[in-house]
Length: 261
Ligand code: CAA
Image (cartoon, protein in one colour):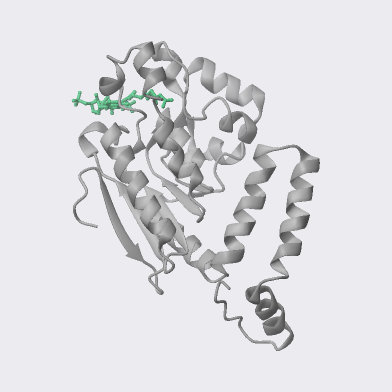
């Protein structure tokens, strides 16, 4: 993909099975304008359908993962335009992607940038990363999950503090509260995120997809419903060739060869 205006894409990893999407609007600190979000959706859809891709890494620059929705672009929006255009609806593609997405966050992840990272499945943070929901200072509120996903991840008190003050938290605090799973020196972040994608890519793409769905179900429903979904999905893996192969390989003390069948 070389025709992008606001992103860069690359396929990497030893097996060429990890896609890296880099937000590339440096002058605006990767502010998430409509054009950028359209390109991101298009790239995600394409990688989602590509059987050779096992995982996707989403990253930005050293200074900013993304500084939020594009304030200058949305400033003139009216209420009726927001409603009738279903403003921000096309951001959902990220959360709809069936393959694992790893956010590799260096620098600012603010507002929509923090929300975008939270739509991903795993967040790795560079040691200088900063997370925040500063919408309140603009006279608005988070609109792409900042009051919802953040609260489920870090709990009410911390989410409320972040959303009501607009204050940022640093990478170390983000790890402490469970927003990110690891803090990594900034210059090693992308490499480690790709390694994580490669590790996931050693497993069955098919079973990884089911597992991702099951973890996400924990977010989206009650414990009883989630446990039921998990159990039935676990049962369903017994209908796959990859489940047979995985267990057979264990018994035969050899690496499994998965086919996603
Ligand atoms: N939208 C549009 N442009 C942005 C932007 C944004 N969210 N964030 C930064 N920029 C632009 C700046 O306007 C500036 O452009 P010019 O050089 O043309 O003036 C350029 O990027 C560099 O930014 P700064 O000069 O401000 O850089 P800094 O290092 O001094 O500050 C910052 C960095 C603290 C991240 C600061 O840019 C900032 O506070 N940005 C806005 C953060 C924000 O409020 N995000 C929430 C947006 S609302 C939202 O996201 C809604 C939602 O829920 C979806």
